[in-house]
Amino acid sequence: MSHHYSGPDFSFPHGDARLDFTDLYAFPKPGDASKSILIVNVHPSASENPPGPTTTEPFASEALYELKIDTDGDAIADIAYRVRFSSFENGAQTAIVRRVDGPQAASTSDRGRLIIDGAPVSIGREARITQAGDTRFFAGWRSDPFFCDVEGAKNNLQFTGDDFFADKDVCSIVLEVPNSALGAKGARLWARTLTPGDGGGWIQVERGARPAQAVILVEERDAYLGGEPASDERFLAAFAHALEHTGGYTPAEAKRVAGTLLPDVLSYDPTRPASFPDNGRTLTDDAFDSFVRILTNGEVKEDKVGPHGDLLLDFPYVGPPHQNRVTKAPHETTAMQNQT
Image (cartoon, rainbow, N blue to C red):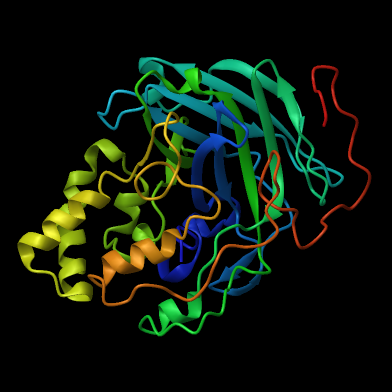
C-alpha cells in the first residue's frame, strides 16, 4: 500500500483518518510545461483497523496541512504552502492557503502570506476550483488515484490483482503554480499534518513523500512520522535491516539501497517529464510496483494492478469521488473566487 494507514497496526495517526497523509504527486501541467501540479492526498474513506468507513468531514479544522519544498538540497524547507480549514458546518467547509518563503518555511506555524481565502471544499462530484492570481486551488473528496493489491501485500506479497482502492475515496489538496514558484534548480517535496499541542504551538503527527516505505519499513513509527527529512539518516540502519530480511540483500547493498529511500522526499525538476521514482510522480505512475521491486530485490516485480480509469484531463486531475457526500446546497463563494 502507499502511506495510507501509517498509524500503529494499519490504523490512523492519533486515530484520526483526517490526519492520515496518503500520497504526494508532482508533475508538469499537461499542455503547459511552464506550470506544475502539486497534489497532497489525505483522509482515506475506508479504515483497515478497525474496518469500515471514516468520517464524512473532509479535513480537520483544528489541523494544519502543509506542503514543504526544499530548493537547495539540504532537506530543510525553503518554501511552504500551509492550508487550514473551517469547521464542517451544514455540509460545507472552506479553506485558507498561505505561502511562506525563506527560513520561516522550516518553522512550525500557520502564519504566512495569504494566497487564497474562503475557497469552497468540494463535498460532491463537482470539482469546485478557486483561482487567485497565478495559483489555482482545489480541496475536497476525490476518487483515490492510488492502486494496489493491499490484501496481497499483507499476505506475504502473494498478489492476485485485486485493487483495494478501486472504489475508495480520499481528500485531495491540489495546487497549480508557475514553475518559478518552486525555485530555480528543482525541488524536493514532502507533506505533513500537524495538530495543536497541549501547551500551545503545533505537533507534527504525520509526514511523508515516497509511497509505502513508512508503512512497511519503519520500526520507530512515532519518531519517523514526527521527524524531519534532514534527520532521516538515523533511520538508515533500520531500513537496511528490513531490506536484508525481505530482499536478501547483503548488509552493504542493503545500506546502499536504503540510502536511495532516505531522506523521505520527492525529487522534482519541473523542466523534465515526471516519472516516479526519478522525477516527481504522476497519477498513473505505478509507485507500489517500484517499491515492491526494491523491497524484494527484484524477486517480485508487480502486484498485477494498474492505474485507475477515472482520472480527469484537466485540473484538478484526480477523478470525482465514488460517493456523493453533499448533505445540502453548498454555501455561496466569495468575490475573490473564480469558479470553473
